[in-house]
Image 1: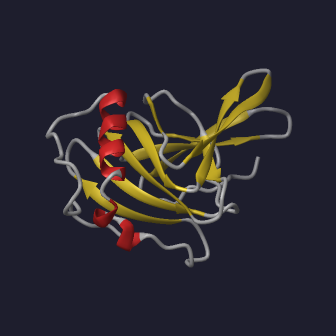
Image 2: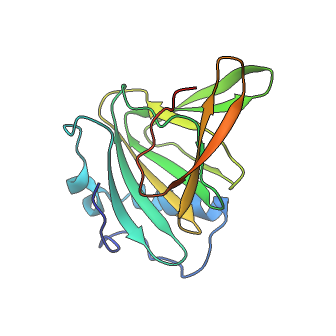
Length: 170
């Protein structure tokens, strides 16, 4: 993990909390400037690689590099809304559904999505060598990581934003 001040070449940080739609617009703009983040892309670290692109009192931005073995496990972003722009390859997002199988979608390069603070999901690399930009507002401090037992009981563990997400055993 690399943590850095705002990366030159990224869109201006707005100085206020952003809505999910504004976050989506922000990551879409950041994705159009690969010179600001391309040098941080790595897929040779033995796991999902992530680097901080910006963090202030209102906005938290990360570059994530994915291979198909990378999986965040079920999680939420506590009080933060978020947005994801896929810049290379594709990622898979699954959202849980009570009484049924999760809803799964693959988001390819050039696409983005946003979500509110009540969103629970898990993400994984759909293609080796995938890259995505994630923005959260307000900045991440805590996240909820979930495990689901074989009998269907869901439990939430509060973790620091600096902890790497991975699937938890049921």
